Length: 223
Image 1 (cartoon, rainbow, N blue to C red):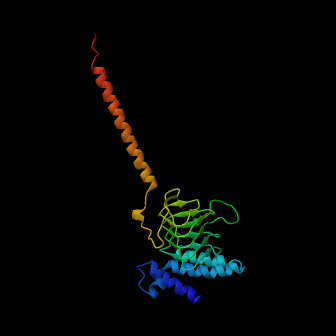
Image 2: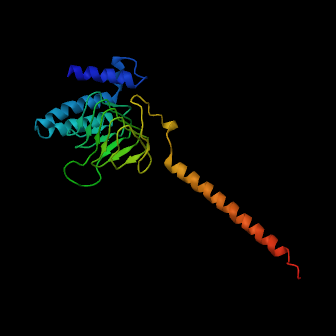
């Protein structure tokens, strides 16, 4: 348990430049509290203890705004930055060194039974407000842009953006930072392409109109 706490401290200092001291993390980081409480609830859940794991989960949710079902399996050095509104479902599986931001949902798509929540590989980063839904897998080093909705599996070393999520980059560097200001915008690009096409067609139509006016205004000479 002490090793787990030490890992959490080290992870927060590595991922969050705002973290200044151990006491600040203990007092002011809801992600830190939620993860430690989940570790306890998960152990009790795996041991078959009734009700208490869910109570711990709900107490954690009340104080942190982060809801993690005690059945979710979470790897080492997991970090939730800010954390408000994060939801992680019962059958979700999360690898090592995963980073997620506030408002992220790892949820299901309906009332199906069995494995119904996502599986995340190692070194995955999920941006603010993104939703990853269903029994799908995100491979190692996958990055999901803020606000995206991912409903299909994603191969490793990919960046996903949009609604529904589309792979816009497939060669992420292992230590590459997710920079939202530099991510491609597939929907925006599609609209821009459509706008250019419409402008081109309007120009062609105007040229045809002008050609017709000229041909009508110049009568043919009789021979």
